Length: 367
Length: 267
Ligand SMILES: Cc1cc2nc3c(=O)[nH]c(=O)nc-3n(C[C@H](O)[C@H](O)[C@H](O)COP(=O)(O)OP(=O)(O)OC[C@H]3O[C@@H](n4cnc5c(N)ncnc54)[C@H](O)[C@@H]3O)c2cc1C
Image 1 (spheres, each protein chain N blue to C red):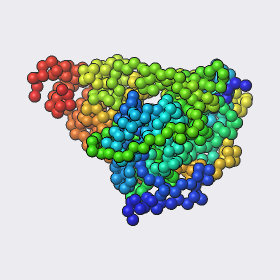
Image 2: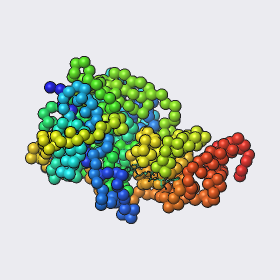
Image 3: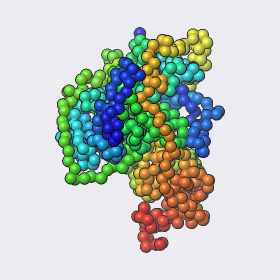
Image 4: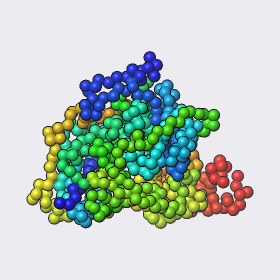
């Protein structure tokens, strides 16, 4: 039997399933959805990243990838849909209308669930952005379906056609292969930057279907946005930074982080931290790197006074060059680094700043 | 009268004490104590502040093994009025869907609440699923990353401020509503002896097992959980050069900067 046949013939014994939740046959579900987030009129980068695993899984399963977009501005959503198609989706559905012109989680999540109840997708993928994390679990409970957060890989179970949602569990430094064999859709999220944005193929084309929001937002959400205030941001967001200088408990103090700031400024980058550094109040949580923080993909990542716990290095898998500065020659971080310096950061950081500045003022110098 | 504010708390292993066995990749449980999920204390603090300002009571719920009664005692020590321990063998091994199903059933059994507050996520699994899933089961409005809550003039709606990375937003929600409280957004108050004394005098903690909640065995615990762990593997290592730059700190720094310029990482 081919994988597609296995998948389509999959049945569950409804007597084993929670009666209150309803029983749906897995074999009657088709297609991999990627829910696209539109920010400032354009499809967000994290949403495009989810097309990478979606395409891979769809190819293995012999099915299609569908972009699903929601909002008030049909024109922007259509443009976002065509961008998703050019980057790997086969088709897209847009739910547009006044009911979705302002973001309210129950309305957005409810519309996704209503569309899913009608179309029966096999898989729904969302990026675990702040809004994605807010919406995905509500969709799951409305559909009485399983959900797996923060996956770092996806694969397909060759025996059943079930989706493997792969993530580090708490109780181990290993990876757990999670699946939902009896319920559909299979819902999963992955944090931004875990997957790359697929390349754009101008030649790709596919159908975009537009449906009215009024058919999918059935009840008022019971909430509304009163006002919104942009926060002043003088730094590049961590996810976008090309140079990241991350400090850990070994840097220890505010003064230590000021030195890292100076190095980051010299590089044109930003400062980040380990969870211990966040716990110590030296870095805000939105600048935490790792399993329960962010994944980064800079050109250069410098880990200073960070031991290199599995939960930390998880966040730097996609980094270009990794440098570790640690006083302990046996620190595990050196196994995850391209270059290591075994020394006290207090001696290394000023030397690095001097060397880089000297190089930049006299570019002919050195090798 | 006044508000009934429910707050969910989870009993989790103390992360500071967690160690892994590098050979087997498993958690070393020996000597690991449990604590109230620190992010839930933000929710408890916000609940207490709302109660102190508008009147009413705060009820903490925890779906956990019996030892979590210590966690409920802790938050009662902070000033929570009542505790409900939701505990039954049948609930063990639940994933987030089956957990949120039991919690929402317990909230229904409370017989009406105005707000249900949760910590934004737990330190042990960080899925941030439960608040939205509970809202989904109960069909209620909900919002994540809440930092401040006020009642509007009518007393039937709340105005919630929440923080996204690039903006602050204010939403108005009909009550009952569910909120995920932003991590580190509050300063949880310390435990007071006078509150702790209530534990002996008033017996403010109830235990509900499935005898009370009467949920079908197929909907709870391991059996009710759609997700299962099929297998596990080691995380594949990213190939790195692992080159230690020897010499004095100055020499090593010079070698590093040279290499980074040579490779085009720096320009
Ligand atoms: C469920 C779970 C999720 C987690 N998620 C994350 C996550 O997302 N991100 C994360 O980072 N962690 C996470 N952790 C925590 C992780 O396990 C580690 O505890 C943490 O990464 C350690 O932080 P650290 O390296 O800063 O501190 P430590 O492990 O204490 O390391 C400090 C290092 O500094 C070095 N040092 C000390 N002094 C100096 C000096 N003067 N100069 C140079 N080096 C020095 C030491 O040799 C040591 O290697 C998680 C843990 C759990 C259980």
